[in-house]
Structures are given as C-alpha cells and as structure tokens.
Length: 220
Image 1 (cartoon, helix red, strand yellow):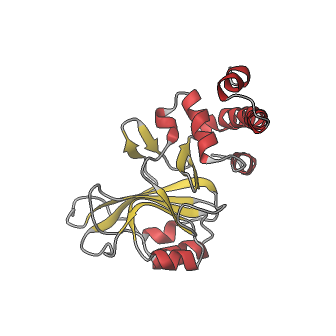
Image 2 (cartoon, rainbow, N blue to C red):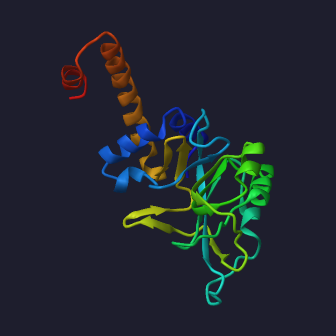
C-alpha cells in the first residue's frame, strides 16, 4: 500500500511525467488509461490533480443474473483519500455514475472517481467541484442497463494493463495513469530527475538554443 509520503511526492508530478517514467520502467502502456479524460471540476482544464489508492468496482449487464452481487451500494464503498475506479461493460450508451453518486463520494472524502465508461449530470459534478474522469457521457442512467457486481477485485483495462485494489491512480487535465505501489519509489525518482533536466531544457530553449542540439546535450 502506498504511504502518505509517497502519495504527496508523486502528486508533485503530472500524469505526463509519471507516464514517461513508467515507459522507461517498461510498464505496460506507461500506465496510461487511454480514452479517459477529466469532465469535472472543469473539462480538461485547470489545476486539478487527484492522487490516491484505487477502489475498484466491476459492473455487469443488468441481465446478468449469475454474477455476484455486492452487499451494499458501491457508492457507499468510497473511502477518504481514495479514488474509485468503476469499470462498465464495453460499448454501452448508458451512464453508470451520476450526481447522486458524486454527492455520496464527496461526503465520504473520496479524492475523485475514474469511470471506464460513461457518466451523466456533468453540471452537478462541476457545481460541487468533485473530480470526475470518464470515457464519455450519456443522458441515460444505469437502470435496466448495468448493475454492480464486485468490489475491490483486479480489473483488466487493456491487454496486460490492470488496475488492482490499492494501485495508485493519478488524474489531471492530460489524462489518467495507474502506478503499482511496488514501482512508486522508482517512478518518483525518475520524475524528479526528469524535472531537473526539463528545467534546464526549457531554459536553454527560452534563450534561443536549437532543439536538436539541446536535446542531444541534456537528454542523453
């Protein structure tokens, strides 16, 4: 499990910085949750950055009567400082997260929600300034389309990229990245080293140095 110190230090870096570090560590897809973007508190703009351990939620089609059923509503499973990752069955045109759920999550102190699927009530999320990241939106709710099945189970995002309970999610206006706790210290170290190089690179470019020569000199 990530420590408070690790989360604080990781939060100093953008998702781009973290993704670059994970690519260097040969983590699948650089941990990038492709297609998921920020809808609230603003649409892909502003200084919002969320960092926290994942609580995973698996949804299934409402018609699936064989899949397990959780003991309580999944919105009640939010926890202070954590980020709920909700995975909707692929290809649905209905939403699985709305304003009522953000209201509950915010009360419980959740850092935000990441939905691999659709959300609705965008204005309500933005009015309460609760961070919501999702693949897309819909005007339709979950009723008759999906239902919750399992909480805190490993979920496959894409090929070899998984989100496990306790993995660290980081989201900002550039997107969302997932970091396994075992790689946190290495990621933080690489991000810090890259930040120092980037500052020197920016300074050189502002002074008129050529891009090619600058990159060759500083990013060996």
